[in-house]
Amino acid sequence: MELNLIQNIAIWALPVLFAITVHEAAHAYAAKRFGDPTAFLMGRMTLNPMKHIDPIGTVALPLLCLLLPGGFLFGYAKPVPVNFGALRNPKHDMRWVAAAGPLANLGMAIGWALLYRFGLEFLQGNSFQLPLVLMAQAGIQINVILMVLNLLPLPPLDGGRILVSILPPAQAQLVARIEPYGFFILLGLLITGLLGTILAPFMGMVMKLIHWIM
Image (tube, rainbow, N blue to C red; front, side):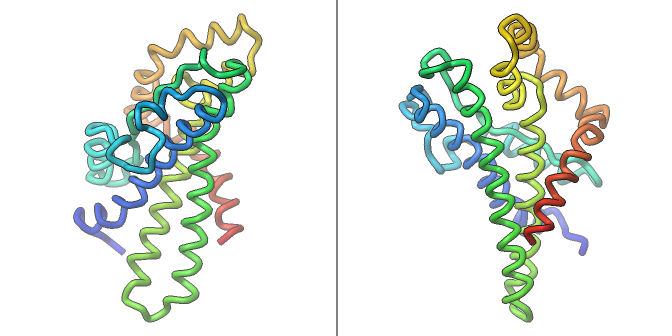
């Protein structure tokens, strides 16, 4: 079914907002759980999307992706501030704070998959069925994308933090030095089309799990 821009925005807006909001709130909750209240004190441990929206990364960039035919949906929220030095065991706890966001996306993808199944099985003939099913599909897709993207072992992405937390100190320091250039590397991969190529097999693996649940 071919949707126009307004219909696409209506279908994708809620899943995107949920995906980024719960992702960032999960980081904030995990940080507080392991000893760093920075995000909590700044009001970022919340499901209020206005606290996490970045005008460029959350609004403009995803809209541009929707406008481009066959484009790879890409976006980001305002990163939750984490003072890793305040964690009770910084090197060990860092991996759990970093992993909290992708795990939240996995949970939401599964939730959208169950909603998709509900729509197909119990809303047949109902006028709400098609919008709900399309929104659930969007919810699955955006959460799988965010999960896999953020697990790339590239600082400052969550996967980069996890990698730094498990490497020996000397190697961890070398990887951490990439962080100032991480966004530009990611942008270069996106522009050249390599990002989608790198993520595709991992997204396929996660989607197989989701389809099994569905």
